[in-house]
Image 1 (cartoon, helix red, strand yellow):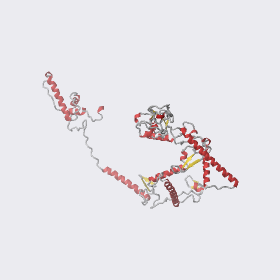
Image 2: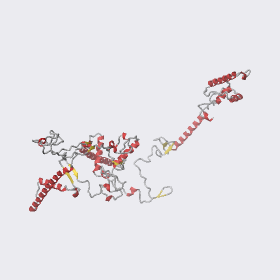
Image 3: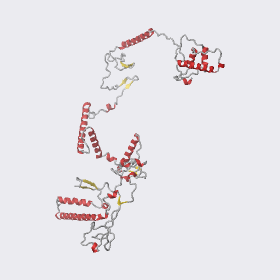
Image 4: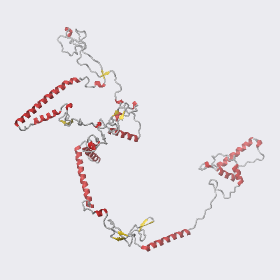
Length: 562
């Protein structure tokens, strides 16, 4: 992906991005498009496609890999070889004493040293060289082929073609001589090793024709004894030229994607066409080649090598392929032996129904032609009743005088025998007498429990004490005057006490404070003071009860609804 700035992505977004890149590389998703509308090759590595952070590129692009600006001073031109400059008629002051050219001195002159220089003879003045000065860019300085004239290679090609033509003519003459000898003698001439080599060389040379005249497209040439050592094989062509290219089978834009780099089209470009009319290697897609033939065997061989290496075996598919293939063959042989051994063991223990005699159809399907008549109660009137098949386990086996099997009775989450209703397994059957005795013992137990409950002494009822307004116990000898209590509740100014007084002692202190404040107000104005006035600083029981009733409890959940 050719993104410039790497923003933070969540784990899910990162996973989706990786899946998209894999789909683009596999050809399942279209390639990414840059700012100019050109497709970006998905196989380009990320370190090349990612733009530097300081470019602030928000769109995918490959411009950071291209040359942004070119210096007009740089040039890729080269020296004009063989071109002559001005040629003087007489010797000039400051020119070469040997040839008379103005562009160099006698020490650096490249001409043949003359017996008498042009300085003294004034004849045969050499023309001046053309000195070109230009700056080369980075690529121009390191270009090995800069200034190369392609036309100069024409004489090399001409010499090679002349040599090949003479060689071909000679080989044809040798072949004609052999044919004439065969016609004269009427027998086949045994060719020597050298002649066989000449025939092979002739066949190879005949196959080397111009591509415009090439007809043998399926021919494969091999070159041996290369400079690098070993042998190499060269395929002349990858397909027959008359066949249609795979990317031209379906020109629909939404059809199978063709990757030009790997020349692969993994999907089928013609999925709706007749499979019999499709060409195996092209129309069905490249994925079919991966899952068929030797490709699947090679895949299994690699998988076996990986698993063997993980389990501790010293095997490597690339380092020692012959060893890995030999181990895989031995593994397959041992696996078949183990399968056959397990199969024989199972057949010895349980038998083989396939080799035994064939079971009759009547027994196989459980049907027969015999007729059996039953009455309404289910009893057989005519014919023989169908035999109930028995399993290999023991059935209807009664032990210890029981007439029913264990598990035929269920009571109080316990299994037992139906005949005697006992829940103890392998116990001796007592019959109806045991059932009656169990019922009698149960009734007796219930009677004893009821008698015990009746004889127990009932607890004495506790006297309920009356509580005050907020959980405070009221003394037994407390007598409240209802008129004084109502008068205490009506006093508004008296109860304007700080609500932070949560305890009774704090409340009394607040009452004394309010009384002292009233005294100070009256002492300021003597005319308002009454005669024989008396202040009572004691708090009565009625006032305490009024305080309890009107006090705000901050921990009361229902205080806001009062």
